[in-house]
Image 1: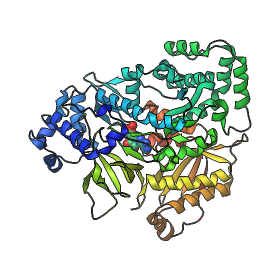
Image 2: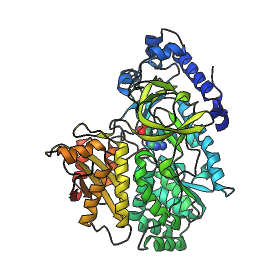
Image 3: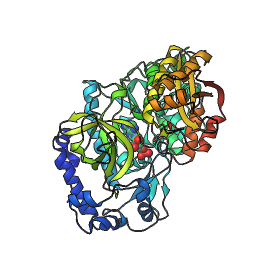
Length: 568
Ligand code: AMP
């Protein structure tokens, strides 16, 4: 049996979510009924009720031994009825460690369907205007192999090395495919920008998978615009672009010397302020397409500044385990985006997390309650059954019969010194409030991460911040502004934090350590050198690895502490 939901449009997919979810589960159970994993719990049955009763809710670590057996050469049917043809390496920057997740081509087919489902919303937004070219900043990491010879790579790298990407029409993008496929991310970034500048009058949108990549691209442009413009002036690609196919295809796009364009790039990039640089260099750009929800929300003010507030569309919510949903309301402000679940992608269940009475109750997709918070469980086509993804979502509405969810936070990203639990949500709220203080002083937050420093008595929260000035004068740190940022952040933290800090004194004053410009690029390079893929990289909102902390600590310029206790 094979479901033909692949061809459905969003209306059909969302009209009868219950039936689709039941069919998806039936199909997965029928496929996997004889796998070693399911056999243990279902003894050959594919009954939904038995599945709910007998198959345990697991975390990745519980199924890891099974996954590793397949990676080490045992047959796919240890976990999956369909052949496993490779593994996705999760980014490891949100959860702190890499996971490998089984996959096959069906995942790529789903990615294609996802694009097809979201494109009408973009077309509608363009309102008849022609969507010409997309300047898409994406990267690839060379595939590695499991001991049994199966490919392992991030979802996005795997996709761009598959035929599904290679067969996409090349006219859609400013960069030739060889630029994305270049294994050296620095050469790749340089060439993306060069191709984008050369075709500046055709660019109607600028995109990357995550907002942080777009912020990184602007930083890169700031460091390299003189060289880029010189390449344009002379019609010659810099010698350090040594990847043959990348160099050849970019040279073709660069074409003859173009002093007129080079002069324009020089003029715009040497302006006092880089405010609106995106719209100045790419005047037809109508929107930015990148995920700006969850921890990516911290990049919204920076992108607003550089793009003169172009709309930012967070189109997709997906992970290495499954594609989950799409954003169907492009008029929504970036902070308020919700994702409409796509019920044909996997079988979804939800554990309620905000209600002590119903704690641990598991509900189906169509039985979630508006306003409630849930942890997501996935049963996918590649051998995961009732597996926790580690994300907390809130139900915000319905599209036909399908619930819509706001991404709230990663479950495990928490800071704690006493018994307080400071979740990603609190940290983001604190950062948002501090950003307002910075804005009033013409400063932008280019990167932030934090950790709980237990080496001091009492322990205290430490934030590493990279700042940039909105004007050309550079960053001038005013003590009172920085101390105010510390205080504003403490005021935004939980009641328990404020009690420990104010009454009990068992948490010390919150500290901000300002780091040199470029530090967060070094942090990204550190994670990429440890196996993360650059397209999937997300700056960790808090850091546990001592080696990563050393990267930051080496670049600290100055330190500031809050000077008063937060209110209770
Ligand atoms: P990975 O499997 O390494 O690609 O990471 C997937 C994780 O990235 C998800 O589980 C989420 O925590 C996060 N993520 C993916 N898409 C979004 C989104 N649209 N908004 C917020 N977080 C997201």
